[in-house]
Amino acid sequence: AQSVTQLGSHVSVSEGALVLLRCNYSSSVPPYLFWYVQYPNQGLQLLLKYTTGATLVKGINGFEAEFKKSETSFHLTKPSAHMSDAAEYFCAVRTRNTDKLIFGTGTRLQVFP
Amino acid sequence: SAVISQKPSRDICQRGTSLTIQCQVDSQVTMMFWYRQQPGQSLTLIATANQGSEATYESGFVIDKFPISRPNLTFSTLTVSNMSPEDSSIYLCSVDGSEQETQYFGPGTRLLVL
Figure (cartoon, rainbow over the protein chains, first blue to last red):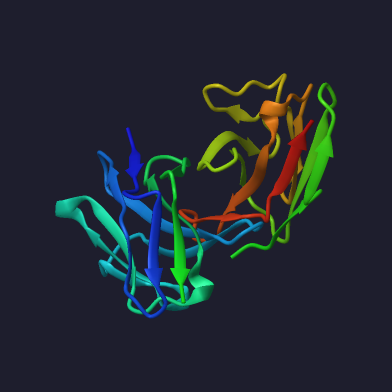
């Protein structure tokens, strides 16, 4: 069965600092991996995804994530945080033989000036 | 990516009543999904809706409580029936994009049941 673990329900960083949001997954078959962002009072927006090929994927707003099969991880990073990055971030996994998208519990990112 | 709209965007309802949420997509899609996001929590899949067939419900969700319609390839409705305060949540619909493996989400319907 698939599962997703996001370490840290809250992460706080200063503006300009590195952002690191952690995601580990469990899947018996090669997964598709996603990061979604939810700004206050809005729906989910796709930030980036890994399906196949290059393991370092770049997304919108300067975010990127690296698929590490040996570590079963898909951590999200951004070199320099902006105030506008404050939001809830969800990691999700979907295997190639199912329609279901399994979400992690989410990480709320706060950015301080 | 698909452009998805939902109506209403938010509502406040009395317990015991029902609310129907609409989801409209700007292109034809095979599968539509309905999720619930309870306050401060992650998303949970309620059901998957294919056009022309009965929706498939996840464990813990039943058709009598959450009836779903899928009359065509661009539209679906989710009804939250006989509501209680525990039904207060954000309800989101999503669809598979042209890439098939990626789901795109609507803006959500914020429901408060008093």
